[in-house]
Image 1 (cartoon, rainbow, N blue to C red):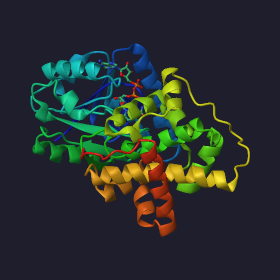
Image 2: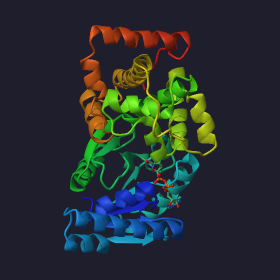
Image 3: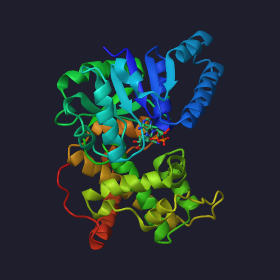
Image 4: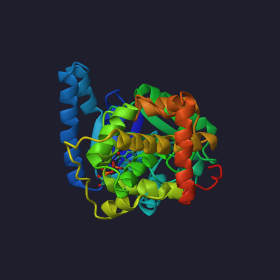
Length: 360
Ligand SMILES: NC(=O)c1ccc[n+]([C@@H]2O[C@H](COP(=O)([O-])OP(=O)(O)OC[C@H]3O[C@@H](n4cnc5c(N)ncnc54)[C@H](O)[C@@H]3O)[C@@H](O)[C@H]2O)c1
């Protein structure tokens, strides 16, 4: 049973994961290498708990209790008593592998190790451990203190007896597991990132402005924020890294030129907030290409057995907030729409972007 959790990295994700654990009374230790990150996290914890109390979602006693269950420290030795360690440090294979070796040397042998990586393969990180069987992927979505979905990724080495305590841990922290294969982008980024990438290709091709593309995305797919706005929230360079890791799946998944340039410059998209009126023809082109990229990559993921259709649907709705999900769009596709989708497939075939995919 998991009673005590240690989280390496107190940034965007580690801080949110820590909050989700401490709020339900798990002993939670956050270990970061910098005092600055821990100071920022203290402020964030205070702000979050205050907001939750103001909204009536948390009593004062529960907020005090959460704070009492949290330890923030730079001392990695505090990991020794943990039942579960979750690493949420920078997305760098060598950094994560080095950390794994360090954690394993300090941790009790029966403790479980998880990674929150988005773009790396869990098995590549686990390979640094003497015992890779104790490791799995727990991929949270931002904001992790609130988002209900966690992708659950086992490698071929992951021991089956990890499943019971980890599922109980997720249930106790109010998270719903989404099982998927250890393959690029796991389940949800596998289609969400190509959809954002297609938005950049539309921009690169001069079809419309960012504001116009975002507006059509909201209308066509029932999302609250379009792809450019979402990329600015998570940072375009993170999307670039995600697309670079998906590129092994074939040319269709190659990062768009504009994303390469902006990601390399570590810049944000300058979105026109009040876009000019978009003609119906251009709206149709944008909607077709965004929907096409979404459906091609979602269908590709399901065909490769990366994720079950019902799980993909649940994740698209709950974690990514699509009112119209890829599975429902595929199921409802009338003949005229499927003809347009095939036209999009033809465009990408002619460009050499679509090649037969091998199962992940
Ligand atoms: N940001 C997202 O939306 C998101 C979503 C899902 C998964 N992820 C993944 O989560 C991980 C963390 O991402 P983030 O956005 O929270 O990054 P971040 O930059 O906000 O935080 C990383 C933290 O790790 C700390 N750190 C670095 N090396 C360390 C070490 N050896 N020991 C302890 N702490 C160390 C840094 O000081 C920093 O505070 C990455 O693997 C990322 O791919 C990110």
